[in-house]
Image 1 (cartoon, rainbow over the protein chains, first blue to last red):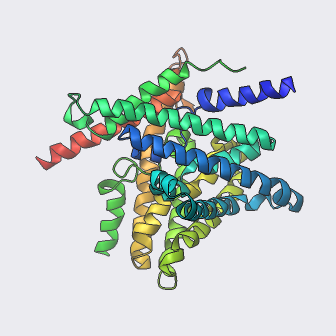
Image 2: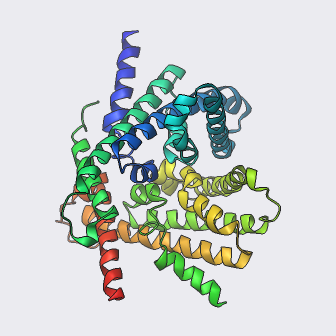
Image 3: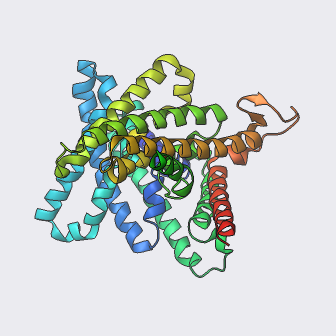
Length: 196
Length: 199
């Protein structure tokens, strides 16, 4: 039991900080650059990503364990996983719209964007590749999503300040965002060696 | 024919997917540690992009617009699966080096974006031009980033040692921050030259 808890803690730390999905693994950069112009939006996006990521990786994990492995359909997984995620996002959108209109208003606009978010698919693949159990997959996907949200909100905060900075005109807009990301990534390198 | 070259060039310079449209960034930064990885990734993306654009453009009149996204996804993921399996079979070392990023071609925004914005509206020949241009533009940028990172990080070019063996690799360039810094500088350079030409 104790070993299991330590394992979960390790998964959490490495997924959220050491192997931060954006700053160390470069997955999910498009929404990271696109949705980080203000803090409020970035929090909404982070919530939506967390929700879909946990759901999607649980469903794909179950599919992998109970359908793909017994039937030896491993080579088929790219197609099926992406379709499952696309359908799932649509489903979540419909259910939220009908039953929880408040939550839908808060994160509805982000949902369609998430379908082709590489982070979701990557977590589904990685959770399966690492051979995690269901509990570990849940912890893993929550921590990855947390790491994503932290990176997104941090960058959004920096970008809000950058708007008032005096920059060379060539660096305005995207270039300076990438350079800010570079500095953030250097900061996150400091977590290396935290988990061993 | 003129239009063909117009769209081909547009993909490389005018609307370069990475430096101008800011799409498909994940694989660019992750794979660009070594020159030949970049070329292989470029080849994979060109293959998927060209094939899926051709198919999507060919069936554009039969696809109802409500269900077009799932249909595009199925087409794109078919070709991605082909690339994944072929690479695993014939280039196992390269496939291992790129790991998760081969399957992730399927969610590469360039392919979905071009399918939605271009291939599903234009005739086959123009879709081919656009796909080739975008693919080549992607490959050029990813290789430009990869070569610089490899040179500073390992002191080699396409795995051939060029700097003297006493050169101490610059870890910063191989690690994530180097990639972010380099792409920021590239976009700024593009802005600089673009503005100079306008004057």
